[in-house]
Image (cartoon, rainbow, N blue to C red; front, side, top):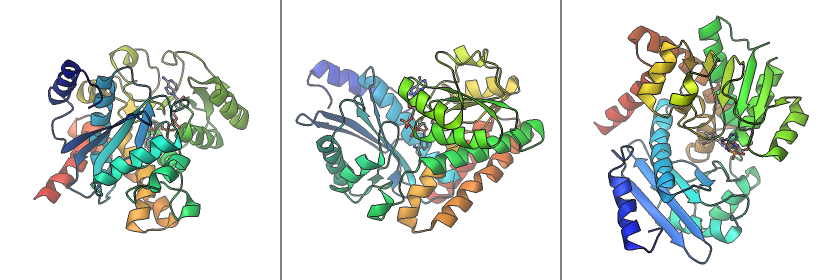
Length: 361
Ligand code: NAD
């Protein structure tokens, strides 16, 4: 457990078992190592379609409960992402509690690798927020159950460019659905979070002729991306800005009771996982306002497709083909959401759940 205080342990346990997100998870593992300061949680939502593959996020959570909540939501999302992308993978995810800029080091990542190894392949890790390809090299020293390792070591490298490409495909499909054309030329795109994925989303949108506004919590990151792509920097709350497309590429739950009424965009298409704070309620609010929401777990699957190439042994051409197909799947789901009168998120979830249910049988 993450704490020595028995009442806190009990509270944490109650937090998990009373948690609405913890309905169908197979396993949740707490990892702690005093020497390296590692505090991590691995969530395995489902192994029905295959081993639970999902990245590791390092974040300075304000409480252990927030970390649990995040890993439960993220690992569930991975099951649906793999299912809708036609991959033979289950859903899992890990979180490390701490500041990736200050607390992370080789010893910590290797210790984390040992915990991953102890699950004997039920969980396979990769990069997520706060974690780099270099970190995966350290994890690889302790376990084979890791993907997203450098190309020089025989891996598939950083998954982020593929994630960004898939997001761009989802953005184009949404533009087509909303405005009758794939083109985003002249549209204003606000990219929130310009880290590994966000930066490449900025690149694609800029090359496609969009006006791009960028936002991040770190000035050095903003200045770097702005100078590369001539993007406009906006510091502070972006939700009231005039924009056509909102691309959330930071953390989840930014589409919520507070922001939906303020958002002037007509399309939401971004990389962040769990963008809707409440899936059904906020998905429906977007639908009622005529905002096209490209389901996150569908359009951000490019990175998962790429890391899966290390397991399924397919080449870069196949990765690109599958990632490009996100365009077709997005259009199909947006149309289905209209004809079935359900939210786009529900339409995507339905297809993913049907595949998982069929495998169970
Ligand atoms: P990253 O850590 O490289 O980048 C995230 C960026 O968001 C950072 O620059 C950070 O400073 C910024 N940020 C954090 N909080 C913010 C806030 N409140 N406002 C504005 N900016 C903020 O992470 P990444 O790998 O680019 O992932 C971004 C998102 O995409 C995450 O939600 C992640 O789960 C999701 N995702 C990533 C991949 C991938 O291949 N890396 C795949 C699928 C989904």
